[in-house]
Length: 417
Image (cartoon, rainbow, N blue to C red; front, side):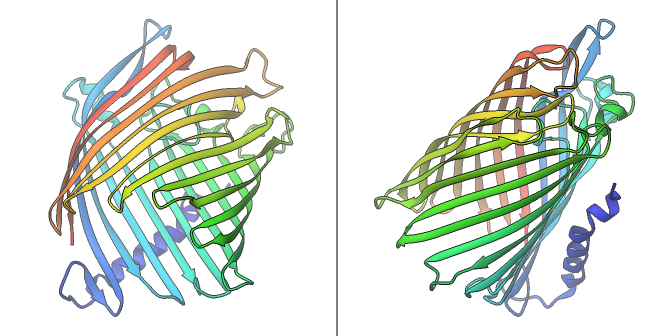
């Protein structure tokens, strides 16, 4: 199993490079400028009330209690942008400290921890007939996205290194892009002694993914293209094999579709294909995406759609299917006030491993709402506020609960130079 130091290596090296550039000459306007490049240091400070900051076992483990708390986020970071048609580099990284104040329950103070997020993107000859994209994404977070059955108590440490070739044989009308992702994701408990998170359970989720991808695009109209997507995935678990075969999980997704503007204001994305789990045959079905957007102007849009897909997940399940409907809108007023809102509904089907006794297929419904506003007071100072709702319903969606609700309200300020 790769060490955590190795997994974060590429991102850490890029972040160190950005820090070394901090002494570059100052120029007019935001950011430190050197040549065509700009380096922007920033600081986000956020106060957030989370109604489900902690889930505790009560009644001898037969029931659970949800505890809320006020959490303060301190997030310093750097953004580096070096534009160039031959060699472009973008880096955006931050380190975040989450301080659980314990104003509702003093026991939540033990949940205070450090998080981090970094993105590195390098483009070589992006406008030429043969280009290369190299990137890496690193994160340490308590919001686990790879497994919807994990809601609280875990930290996920993820590194996704990627490589993509862009081949344009006919003056850019056709683009063929083979690619590869190497992903490592490990889990740990935020708080030692947490009855809902133990090291054995956390370690059973640790995995390594290899994704071989192929993207094709034929731009048969100025703003409309036929697209083809393919992905072959191999997942291996560091402990317990992860599937009843003991060799990991092999999956395939392939789809064909259409993307682009169909009128001045309407934009469409249509994809239809097939998804297959070759290892356990838990999923063998159509996958699809249908999205329609209306562009009121350059500063206002609304879009809605439906996605059907599946993702591998850790024991005792092998994967989950996801049918998702969503609606989102964005509006920029006066070049200063940015309003956004998203509503989404997911229907999850969790497929168990065949070798697991006593584990049956289960379903889960998820509703999420996210609304907020950001306002630019000065070019270097922004404020924002918002509300998020997460609601789950099903058979023991988390711990001993058949429903799980998380309400979050936040206020934030951002300083960026």
